[in-house]
Length: 215
Image 1 (cartoon, rainbow, N blue to C red):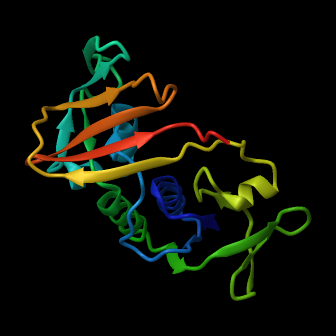
Image 2: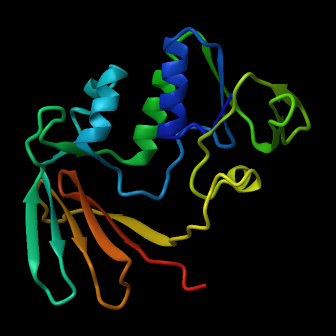
């Protein structure tokens, strides 16, 4: 059982299915569904998508070749993706509403993988590994993979997640002048938080703000 059908969960389900392992992929939401995230895919992540034969699905999206940082006093530092023998010299920006749907569907191309829209409310891996879903039904599994995000209540219940909270806001804008670099601005009032502008192509951009939870 894989709990959570975001990029991590769907990728795990894909590789399990590819290995001939019967896999149940669960998510409390139906797809497509959006996710607060800049949507950048790094060269390292691309190498995993290559293993999944997935990369051709995103080659029409905005290509990214580097990052531009702006310090609190206005200094700008720009850098390109370094040349390495193992990774590409670029990444992509793909809106999560598109990426997650495509990855979930890609996992389902393996006949051993099944998707169900279910919310998991509890798990037990002491004697028999099993989960309980919101309807009350219990499902036993040889293994349970928790991929339901940083705010996973299940992970906290079994001490697999730290107390990390970083509230964020994002919006999408059109007619934005951008290039092929991510833009990250460290404003003195929100450090160690930051502002971002991630180009999505055709003048569109994902603009957001993330900062530590003051509580």
